[in-house]
Structures are given as structure tokens and as C-alpha cells.
Length: 340
Length: 131
Length: 148
Image: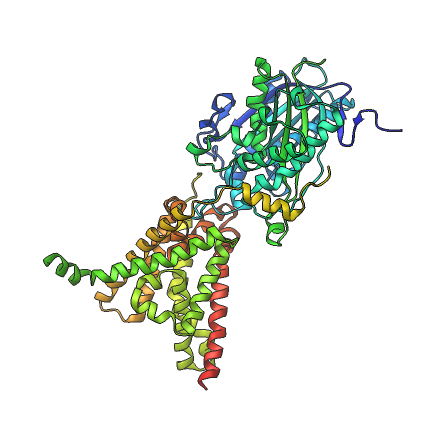
């Protein structure tokens, strides 16, 4: 007896594909000056947003993004069955303190920068399984709170190498419903942890690319889709270096996605002008690109079927100091505007 | 001519500045090569530099560099190692084995105290800015 | 998925795909800015010498002044802007040591003055003190036993 909705080795095909009924995105100043600036709901002038600490600001961003998304769906917080959220901070305090006052049952998750795909996947499964009618998937990251936890104090005079990425200050929330007219989440390919031994924390793209390749390859194998079935395949934050590597590795496996493949970390910043080196990173990167740009382009009809693959690096400063490499994971979500 | 004399009177030999510039710049350039070409993090490079400063002073190779380069040799972190090593030598000469422990920190006491004090005061007054 | 790459092969491949730092430019900038900082130190040192301080006092006073400059520029959010271009030119001089103490002190203020500012002040610079002091003590002991 095997699971009715599972196909292949790692993919779920929904029987009752949930719809995305609204999204919201809040970003920091730098993101609000980038190529996608017109797609976000709100741009902060100041990364503190009136709060005393960076962490409190990040929580506020998440709370406001979730509230806004629920409002845009013409619902109120009592009608949301569950929230699925997480972030980069230790013990996910960005999410927990942001959600604290909303009074919505909460599943806390950790997927590092893959959290947007992770939360979307589980929220969709819960709706398709008949466990909920409305669910929110959300995540955030904040440049300042990430720097002080993972790297250096803000005023430290260090030099960033060309492979380094810039953590996006952004919070994105998506409301899913069992009723709705699309865009629909039809498939989810759940990733495995992949680690090809990269230890360089300044080259996350290279560390995460193998995980994205593994998931994307498995997705095509499990579903029988081909790249041409999609209008766009977009990874979360492989950025310039990781994107090239992923493209090459997939070509080696006879999957050519080059003419419809990009990455959220590349789309969100104009790296020459904004000095963001390889590109953006962080949970918020894929979240705001999905909630802002991708969702709106789908509503406009410019994108009909996309494969959204957020990627995460599952290390901590402790594991790096102990000489460990960087294990990574990627989850793929198929989103299509109409069914059939 | 008169400009040079005026300069010399108030600021010392111009050559002294040029030597400081070249020696200091070169030591920093070595650090840059280590940052870009090796997997060593800045923290490890600084530890290496200060330790190297102690060792080179111990074997008598750093003093000539200080004589030649002045601040170019004492301002970089190798110079901190130099101060520690010289302090320890003085300490042992004056206090025997006790001086091995007290001499280094005694010689660098001003710098360490200043770092702690100014660190605290500046943190009191200023806040980090978003980038 | 069959691993097409072994870990070693992948690391070699990543090396070939990852852009390198503009090393020549970085070395030149480190040389120029590091040299400039040392030149300022020379000027300060000469100033104290002219004031009649002894050799030891000059060394101490110069260190303290340079540390103050590094600390102040860090407080003004200027030091890291210079460091972006200077690289080792701002990390290696003693002003960089000050920056590595002042920047966490400022940053961790939000965790309070005792556990934040007080405890985290040496999170970056600590190793320099530990290894410098230890090396000097070992040298001191060797020196003592060689002398006697």
C-alpha cells in the first residue's frame, strides 16, 4: 500500500491543489532601490523601523507582512488555520516574536534560506490533506541581524570577496486557500540534504548548488515534466556563482534549463551598482521575490507555470568553526496559473 | 631649500616619513596577499602577525626594521609583537623570571587600556549604522 | 542522483568557476592606505618626541593616539568604508585592532552593557592578545634561562 499522492521518489502531486489568494512583501532600502523595486508592498527608509534592535525590526517586518497578506485576502486572523514560518536567527526568534501577538496556531520551521519553499510545501500539503482551509507561509531575513550572528559586527572593517552574497532585508508572506482560482500549487519535490564538502562560508552559492541540482533533477524524473513545460525555473539564492554551477551540473545530467533559468539572488539586486558582489541571499530573498515579483507576474499573465526552488545552507557559526563543511537543501514547488 | 628646513624643524626628516610609508605599506601588502591567496581568515592572519613580531624580535631581526622604518614597523600588528617582546626582555633583566610574565603586558599596557576604555566610551556614544 | 562529482572534484570545479579577488588592485590599495596610516603614526610619534617624552613614553603615547583614531573613525561609521577598499591596509595597523574592539562593543550594546558591550568587546581581537601574550611569555622564559 503506497501513499496515493506521492509520485516517484520525492515528489507530492496534490489532489486538491491549493490556491495562492494573496501575498505581501516588505523590504529594506537597498532592495527598494533594486530592479524589482516596484513589485514590493512597502519599502523601509530605515532598517530599524522604529524598533530598538535589528531583531525586533525583523520581527516587525514579518508580522506586518503576514497581517498585510491576510488583509489583502479579505480575511481576518481568526480565519487563518495555521501559520508556517521560520527565519535565520538562533531559535527562529525573528518569526516567533513576530507572530507572538497574532494568535494564530503556529508551526515553526527551520530551513535556513529554503524556508519559503519549505513553508509553502507544508502549508500546501496541510490544505490538500483537508487539515486546513486557510494557511499562511512566511519567512524573513534582515541584513543587520544576520551579519551580527553569522559574520561580523556592522562597523567591522573587513573586505568581502567577489563570491560573497548580501543578505536581503525582507519579509514575505503568502496566504493559501483550499478555495480559489489560482495560481495553484500543484507539485512539491521535497529535497534531501546534499553536501559536496564546500567549507567556504563566503561562497554559499557553490555550497548550495548541488542540492538545487539534486532536487530539480529528481523533480523532472518524478513528474515526467521537461524544462519546456515551465515558463521559468527560479532558485532562491544561488546567486551568480551558484547559478552557473547549477546550470552546468544539470546539463551534465542532460537537463538544459539555461534559457528559462534565473535566481532570486540575481534578480533582486543590480550587483554592479549596488555592490552586492555575487547577489542576494537569505530567507527573505526568495520570499519577497515570490510574494512580490513572481506572484504579480503570474497574475498579469506573463508567467503561467513556474518551478520555485528556494535553497538553504544548513550550517551554523559553530559547525564552521569546528571545521565542518556546509550541507544544503532545496525544495521545489510547482506553481501554475490555471489547472489543466 | 627653506621649505625642507622648515619641514625638518617641525616634523623631522622627510625621508623618515617615506621609509615609514614604504615599510608599513609593505607589511600590509603581505597581509593582503595572505587574505586573497590563502584560506586564512583575517583573525588567523592577525594572530600570525603578532606572533611573528614576537619571534622576529626575539631573534633580533625586527629591531633593524624598526630602526629603518620607524612607525612603518611599529604601527602594524607585528609592532605589537615587537613591543611585547622588548617589554619581556626588559622585564627579565629587571625582575628575573617574574619579568617574563609582567614585562610584555607592562610594555603594551597603554595600548590595551586605551583599547578597552575607548571601546567602551565609543560604544556608549555611537551606534552601528545599516549598510 | 548518482554523484557525478566526488567532493574533491567538486571543490576543484568550484575553484575554477569562482571569480578571484582583484589581487593586484587589492595589494596596491593595502600598500597605499596601510602606508598612509603608518605615516600618520610617524608624524604622531615625532610630535611626542619633540615634546620631550622618553622613547618608551613615545611608543605608549603613539599607540594610545592611534587606537583613539581607529576607535573614533569606527564610531563615526567611517572606518569600514575605508576598509572596504584598503583590506589589509586597515586590518593590519593598530587602528584595525581598535576597530576590531570598538565594532563589537558598539554592535552588542543591544544585549546590555555588561553581557553585550563588556563581554563581546574582545570577540574578534581576543586571539591577538592571547597569542601575543603567550608568545611573549614563552620567549621571556627562554630568554631568562638563556641569560642565567
